[in-house]
Image (cartoon, rainbow, N blue to C red; front, side, top):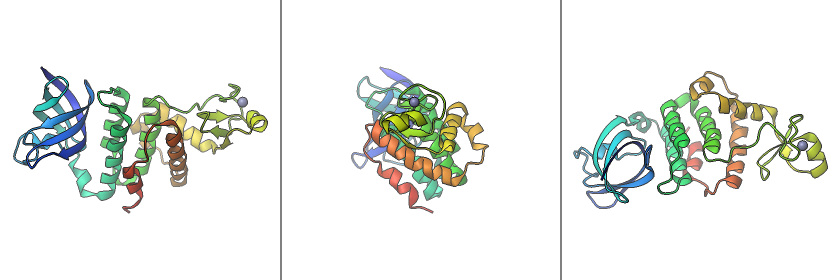
Length: 243
Ligand SMILES: [Zn+2]
């Protein structure tokens, strides 16, 4: 059986001197493993479709075990390799997608988000793109925080606290009566709401305060640690080392 699908390479592993396995996030088949015979020979026509980040139209053979038959590369994101910092953000995005998806799992929202985020990655807006990616990823993975109504009483006023275990905002009254939630800066709630309604392009037109992005980073790390079944990612730790 043959399948034609667009996909993004999440990971590449050399299995012998000549052959390669790649983890491919595809539109039609979800996250799959693909065997590439001779994929480790740079002159092999299939090899160019096996490198992380590559966006391509793939022609695959097989049903449960897939073998690469043909590839037409649309974007190799080659420029990531010229700047370690950009490369580290791209590596985090593909690693995040890889670790959040099970084998054969589909997620169109996450696929399009990953593609948009990789396309928008530029040296001077890396943290901005990362914050957008993470907030939207929470939505794509079904664990978006409740931002518009108190998770205790459903009220819409005075939402000045946030409870990570409750997964959303808590109003001042409920905080006082139950002790739940920590104070959250209103700008963080506004930023998350903005990210959820704006395209990445619209969002990047706006100047975003660096301190706010730092606060978001800490908040999202804590939130993800609680709500996603995801071990801490080494690729995320690497983001801070290349300046
Ligand atoms: Zn309340």
